[in-house]
Length: 127
Image (cartoon, rainbow, N blue to C red; front, side, top):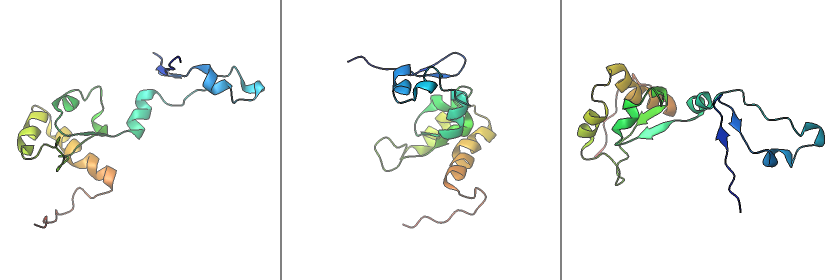
């Protein structure tokens, strides 16, 4: 069985093989390609968020993966977490990164995603 691929063209349109679209369309609509209102990069920026744990390249490559889509988390207690070396990993990930970008990834983006107030006092973690 042949594999079907979707391709994002150089002008930013999603090119989908015609058969999946046309087989369910009335005849008067066949031959009209679907058009998307947003570029794939705009769609990703509006609808995707990327969580990072121990990934120094994601912040360094922020010109390709917009910083407003990145959120850091320790992923504790899972085996891929940064714990117990969280401070070390944060210094590696954010080495040479401007403070406003660091705050955006560590505080502002997660707060916006989870609906939290970034200026609220932190609560003491129960032991």
